[in-house]
Length: 137
Image (cartoon, rainbow, N blue to C red; front, side, top):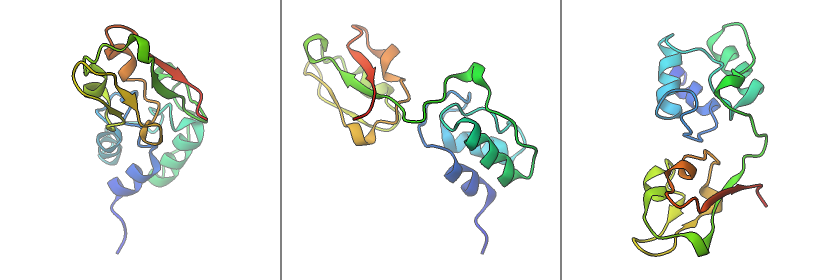
């Protein structure tokens, strides 16, 4: 039995759930492509190689990813909480689409690095600017 088109497209996406494509995550983007409602060039985390793979899967001409949507990082940065500045508001936890941030109200939060996709959605959510993006490692 052949894997459905939406599943194949979703597997090609980086699963960052960053929303730079204009959809609420990788799966909704894959669904829109499968319906013919979205182009293959909307995923900065996937870069040009990702756009080519999506085009191949759909049998459409390959195009480079749309650089106006964001930068491609071959190795995405990781979020890190600056402990001294964290007020424990939980807004970063609520913003993280992959549950990579843990903590409790009024206590310092921490990023679980292996789960962080580098989407940066936690950065603007923080009211005290205590989240920084750092190179992995």
